[in-house]
Image (cartoon, rainbow, N blue to C red; front, side):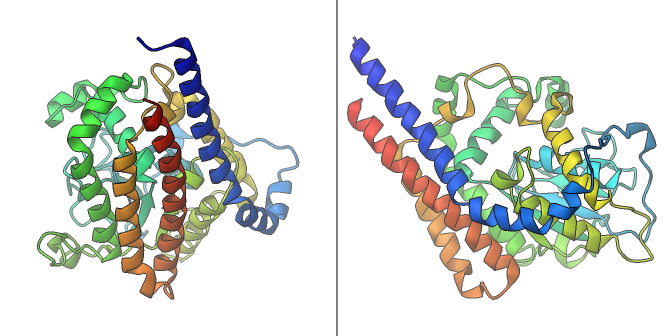
Length: 355
């Protein structure tokens, strides 16, 4: 029987975990964020208390044939918020690789995928031109993927998944369900997480054969990302570095005379971001109100150590190439993840020592 004193002690330790994670997330980015916000201060002030709308669903237009199409790819989980922001900034709809949206054949501007993850499919043939790589700390990405699988009732085919779509972004599983799945699938998903990064950073290189995938070599798409976005700093109500990186890329992509896309005016973009984040009807992570909070889906200290080691290995792989902006951004982001994992591992060891 567990004593009341012991339960209280665990609650205190759990609170320390949450506080440590939040402190590290805020502290490591405050200087960079202040610099970026200062650069864009004139743009945000130009609103002068004005409002914006992100409800143009009846006004979506089809981009011209010459307009560049963008593939948004990430390990499963996190893409929805990113594509909602892209849709708000461009006033164009977004499709998905399994065509749950029914828009895959509508000549869309952006398409989201988790390719080459096993839960994805290359269904767009030769429609896309360029790539954005969205990455997330695996400490949060893997539980988010499990939550999505849980909401889909662990469906194994398209038809079974389709009937479960109404359950997405509604509920989180019990912690016991998460822990059982975690222990059975941890190594597989860590492999998939690392393989996903390497596949795109290497321009579509199959991590099993070592060859460039024919999807990338025989189609017009540039499988080496134009930009890397860190979900953990992008998914927030207020603008941060990643939001402005996305805006800059969209400006560059659609600046040519051949483009039929007009990106939302710079002074209204922060307003659009706030609206996407604060609108639960759009169904992203903010929408889930049933079940445990995300920080309760923890990893063991051993798993956190493996996670940290895998990220260090990946960081060191790209460290010699940091003269390239893409590799520099990846190494910077992985370094942040590694520090956060190490801090949480220390606290998790304390918890386990009390059990």
